[in-house]
Image 1 (cartoon, rainbow, N blue to C red):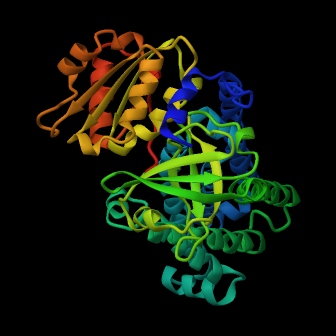
Image 2 (tube, rainbow, N blue to C red):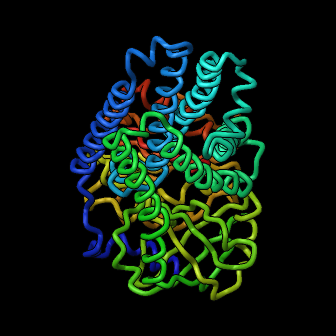
Length: 460
């Protein structure tokens, strides 16, 4: 699969398998999912209120106990929402993109921890008041004598650990592999929490409707994870049987990994999307990492291009030929389906050009294309020759910007000079966070609507 073959795809007929994703339908599905999530929260609160009585509220510690139960219910419900947001449900991925779903996951994530902590504190005070003991004594009584409370305490610790490691400061100082293993323990935490909830929760004992409701939503959330995080990727990987057939150095510290499989051309893939790749070799089989496709599928071949930024990406240059590859995806909305005009601006820096290269291949015929490639030196530009051929084949315009960040700044003035009609274009960005923030901010100031600025981040 030569570079000329890759570049020539822009002139080839569009693949029959590249069926346009119905983004409007996906957005409606996302709206419906949001509505159902809101109704579910209302149902959870209503069932919690219905489980209380005037007598229980007026008893010693009654209000603290009721508040503790409610914070536990709402915290558990939000925990399930967080779980579904990271379950990679296809219609949510197509409508919103993984980066936005993960942003919501992070935004909502602290609330279950806070609410469940309050659940424990309030119940300790409430039950303690009823038993005329202090909250510390009551907490010890919970752990020793109540079913599955010790398990729930372990679950809370595991969830809190996952939450702490998700803070931006912690993530920046932590290896991806460590973060990934820590988050695997949240599945154990959920199992422990579920057992505690049904056996010790006063809202469920003697309340069959509430019990049925919680079993249903837990089953739904866990079903999403089992189906879309594990089942579908496993079936897809076994069906296509991807194996590594070539590794090529593209630039210092940057390699392309080419894989071959069965019926790869039947995958519905959009240029700009990415997979979670799991290379089944020693030291790598247990972890999956997100890398973009750097070319549209050609026959039975897939290609991703990776920069050595960590232990996993650095080892790909030495991966044995024939290594089997499991994949999750494709994911991402940095695709032609988000276009609202037939005029686009693609801005990429370094290895960030890889999803834009695949997007460039996949754009509809007749699209007016402007591409800005940013790099500190000519050697740092990845796949620049392929980009040049594809832009030329489309009759577009390519501008290469070389120099340090101080020498070359894509601020408002420079963007207006390079792309005077940027306000009339869809803008696709991929590269370091500083670059994408600068260009997106400049584009907005020059009149580009927010809905036409497309950025997707794969940061964990």
